[in-house]
Image 1: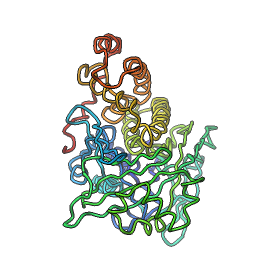
Image 2 (image 1 turned 90 degrees about the vertical axis):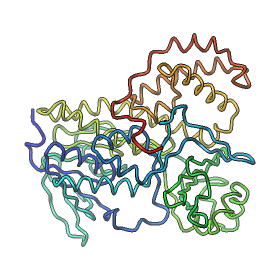
Image 3 (image 1 turned 180 degrees about the vertical axis):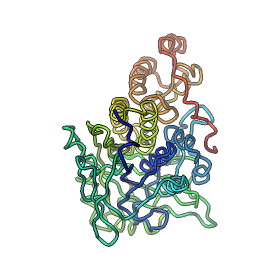
Image 4 (image 1 turned 135 degrees about the vertical axis):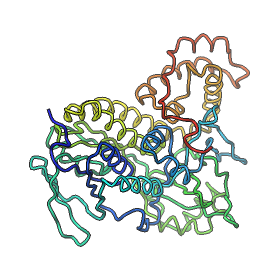
Amino acid sequence: MSSFGERGPVVVVGAGPAGALMAIYLARRRHRVTVYEARPDIRRAEIPAGRSINLALATRGIVPLVDVGVIERVDAITIPMRGRMIHAGDEPVLQPYGTRAGEVIHSVSRRGLNAVLLDAAEATGRVEISFESPVRGVDLAAGTITVAGPNGEARTVRFGTVFGADGAGSDLRRAIVAANGGRAEVDWLDHGYKELQIPPARGDGFRLDPHALHIWPRGEFMLIALPNPEGDFTATLFAPNTGDGGFASSADPEAVSEFFKREFPDLVAMVPDLVEQFFANPAGRLATMRCTGWSLGDRAVLVGDAAHAIVPFHGQGMNLAMESARALDRHLRDRPDDTAEAFAAFEAERKPNADAIADMALDNYLEMRAGVMDPRYVIRRELALELQRRYPDRLSPRYNMVMFSTMPYAEAAARAARQAEILDELTAGRASLADIDLGRAAELVAELAPLPQPDPLARSDALSV
């Protein structure tokens, strides 16, 4: 048995939200940490057009930010969103996320959140971050990585323990899985995305309600928009990669213009250079990555997207990654003298939950692009919120269990499956809430086990609302 702090240098590969947060946790345990990041410093470099990506910060991400003491700085760069604004008819309709004041999600730029975490990591005085330093080779047996510098020169770096937070395309994952006989499977979605910007109105006002996540559901494709503090919105078009209406068939500017005029006429009115943006910004791919064998003894471990990359349709990729960093820190604290066992326990806890949210994220894409327009979805959602109001200690909609609690994802999925059976029975043949047999509802809800207590750090006032 050994503690990783006794093995030699502590290295983190990747300085995104998960890597920066992991470095903070390690520094809090009085380790000196070196972080290697392939890209330039996000606080100073220009972000390529179409690659900014807004994040939906929810309870699972808020709790670690409270834990490491940066929540106030994050609060200053977020905008709370109280529900989905559905653009499906003549007038947009708000579908609230929950029944409680704190049940909102928060739009935050990846760059802004990452910058706060990088600043906090450096402020510990124990974290050194080397940007433009991609890892070009990993020798786990020797305990070394080969790092390229800004000018292309390569150097060999020794480590005692390395934390792989280098994202979905992780080089550390390939090395660890090859060494321990694990397996990594990538399931590419047949849909991709393209980012667009909705500019502020004159006078720097918002062109849309800033306190909602806007969705234009269109069945096989959809557009979403999240607000930014500067008054603009980051919009993302999700569509098939191939076929009619897919990105591969969108090579003609006139056809693209007609597509937007037909499907999103309100967007055309707000974004004069919409077609130009469409062709200037790259199309991104989407995939789910499931992995077994997250660690190698006490020498290396994966955290964040390197261990569990998911599609973005439940707004949980970043929240999942930061929750995992906090969980890894907890396992290391629980087993200070047996790092290998801590790493193994971390995977045993987190993998079933990562798999559960991966499945729920795929399900939520169908819900967002088509389900939110279905009258059956609307009455089920209304009933779920009404039952939550009446029985707050017994029932919570699946979306709320995922977004506004730290209940293990796998438990949320299992509870949601049973609740779906209840909602199916109660809404069968019913057109509105007034038609629901609430007496029968009370009997069915009473059969549910009580909801777990919230995390002490999951304060409803953790961010401004």
